[in-house]
Image (cartoon, rainbow, N blue to C red; front, side):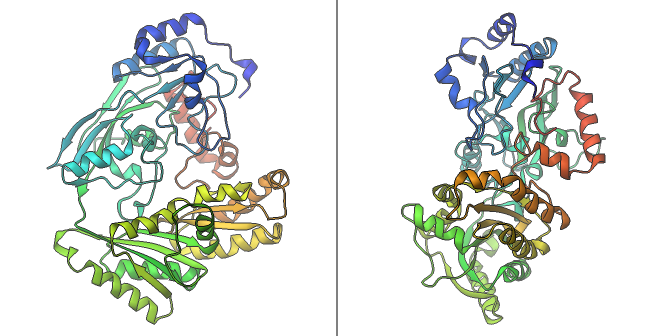
Length: 478
């Protein structure tokens, strides 16, 4: 963004915003603003004269109306756990940061309709808890669920570990309430599974990263609470055996696979080396692993462990599985998950890294893992792949640590070339350069390179139609 083209926000606008939300709804102290202005990865530190924290949809509407009339840019923010800089204002300080953290009410739970209606600022873990307290289950689960908020989850179409069975955030949402860029409130909240009355408007806002309006509430799908969950930590022969095991497990279990996470040994070793209270689940070392979970309701729960054993024995007899251990308790299952969930944290101890959130068709995951690693090792001998992720939906977190004998600075100087190698391979296989983290600021240039011109033109047309003054999260995504 060209900072010189954007004037500072006039004090009269700040005064009107203060009046709209009251003293409890604004933050101007520099120290108090800091947590809102730094992105999760530490890539960006933004600036804003005021953090505005409305407490109701009506207050959001007034704030947006003021900003639209005065051409004041707005950066919406949920829990500030995004990984692409989409919720961080630019450094010039001429944007208002609109935090949804005060809009944190659970408005309704309809147990017979299997729905929960929540405001955008409700923390994801609290949605899960509220569902469980009503003998229901909300399956969206990810590493930041203790701080991530539903509005942000929907705005980035969050994925997580349950997509294989339940789909991403988009599939878990039946309706939303949103404030449009001109300040009008669109109430699209409903608990309908079927509504064929024209365009499904909610999907414009889900995944739009705050560029088309502000999601203020959502009606979400609930599911029966699983009566039993079986967790296994599995060593597999190779990348192709991973994909074959998934296909077999889905067939044998009548599609009861809820999680299927791949981890290469290098990724696991990072967690074992750097994260306290982690231990290797298997006595021997292998090159490739899977964390697999099955879940069933009451009717099938009593035999679920036997089903898991059948899957593993069948695959072991055919050489796909080399070894496996089934969790005997919730504690042991948690130990398995701790390894998987702390890999990104552990990688930080190894110096500079290049991170990618790509997806390819599930059938192409193994070929991608083999070919992309070969491409990169040819380009940079000694580069250390750290691949893990949601094989069940084709989403791999394809991270790469610098060679042990290379400086962070030299590695970062070559990151553009690394991205190009990874993304070229991904797109050639019919994949996506962003599976679940979004575009934000970080990948905006990559989107321009790899998205089709027709798709970009449609996106720009929608943006111009809904936000002609360009106030909603400018220079993010597009």
